[in-house]
Image 1 (cartoon, one colour):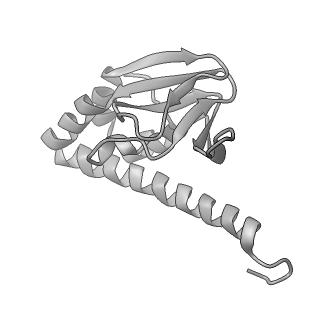
Image 2: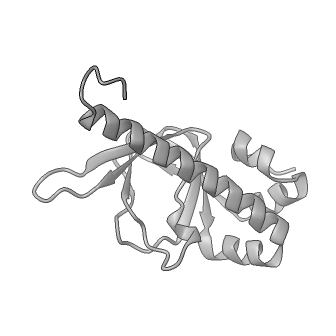
Length: 152
């Protein structure tokens, strides 16, 4: 049996689906400060973090990119690989040393097309991750803009 990338992945997929997916995983070791991708760049890979922390950021003219979220061990990094035109909607940087499984997006999309059950399971997993990111962004916006003491 292949190593399991994350508890969420393990719960979302059958053992056979996990084995097939993990067969196309490539272990990577990224030093602190590595840029994984830039906003607007081609989304050709995605990752499941085994260890470490990655920040998601957006460019700010004349400044360092603004951090909008954090991805931690056990989580999926990247969703733009699943939706045409397959371009990143933000940037990502390793804040610590990161060990991850890297997946080739085109290969996984072809696997999803060939196996609708796998496609549905991975689609739901990405949707859950997106919902988490949206909720996280909502909380950050409320922290920034809600009147203090308003109860919002």
